[in-house]
Length: 275
Image (cartoon, rainbow, N blue to C red):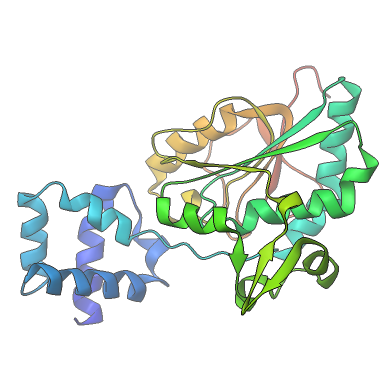
């Protein structure tokens, strides 16, 4: 399959999936490889014939949609983000919760893939911050559309490449070696993993912190971005924090959010009456 042929194909079909071509520019070879394998499975001769097959077999769009999921993640990804969470964001959220007499800090990791992000949050809290707020329990909800990835997340075992950015003290505290992998210790496994398609469903309740990084605002088309992010922000508590990818930008008309001082890609939701 020629790269130019696949490029033309993706530019034609991605809008039907609510996706934007710009987000796939760097990862198109992975998607094209999956599509090429699918052509062989179906006995379809080329991409033009596969496009026709899609039009005649609507269920195949779900297969193509799955090919367009790019589950790239690792522990402590973009470490400066987690440094900012540790030093400023989580303490501010915890102190606000304590002032209001709450006993839980609720966090949501959206599009969590194999669980590296929510586990990073749980490890960071338990090892670095939790002792300062003994009255608060950290609740972490993690969602993803892919049942296979969620199975790997629940298993909680990872290779060296997933863990290389995690600070050594956190690695030693939170993981036990198991063959060629490291497995998360039981005390860090209190994560609620839910299979949800963020395009259609978001978790119930309100959250003090939402991490929605490197998926919605990278791969979704602008109209779908706005639609999804409106639902995401609606789940964010007033005064709460939203974290997006460091190379991502929020759509326009999110006036209820302001950049959190001192950090990248982090926003605070205005509180009624706040100056």
